[in-house]
Length: 315
Image (cartoon, rainbow, N blue to C red; front, side, top):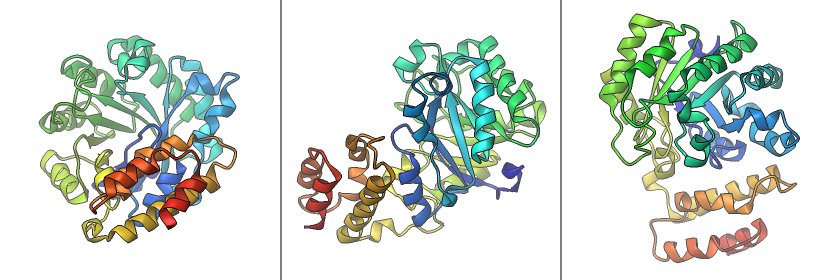
């Protein structure tokens, strides 16, 4: 099983909606790759509906994005079963169930973090996914420490299933969003619970990790198998390297990388599967730290085509 072959601690690029598509993953792969990639979360119920074709681009990946886990969300266990079977055929290296996203529109429908308070359905989803995956295709869950308060009985429930190959814990409750500091001491407690309840499950910590060095310190302190970096990648696209040189990059080098990102976006989404506005999320990564950067960003974010973006950046 591929997860068992990863170094300890291993480093993961966190799933982020409208961020970690194949384009951004390829950019990171070319700079300083993580040990494991995740897709954005993809709705299983949508994949088994007439809207399927609109969602399939979220599952695109290239040969340089391995090993890669597809992250799923949704409500119907039967659809998790069907989609997991498809993921195996597509060549993914594992499947992850999102039980942690706190976005109101998602939670209101009973999905993701709402499953913390619906253990019967959460269990059915895990069982259906594992039934499709079998013994050789890893199944994992990414979740939080509780819904509106810390609730370690939720973690106990997940580990007591004794079938998860990996459990990624964001060190906050759903209610806290990203407003409070991540509770790494509690992530450490999750690892201790794992040792007792299901020693074979890998535990990954997530929340406020700046870079590899920071992650290694946290992994050593709390005895974790892996570390997931999310928003930290916006401050340092070389966050997975052992010695990041990002702070030494010149504005010219950063602009050149943004041009590469936009050109790859243009090449990958020729049929308009992605809105041009999604590029705005990346603008501040590349366009910062020099006089006039704010004004340039504002101008770039008004543009309606990759052609216009490239024209501005190349001039």
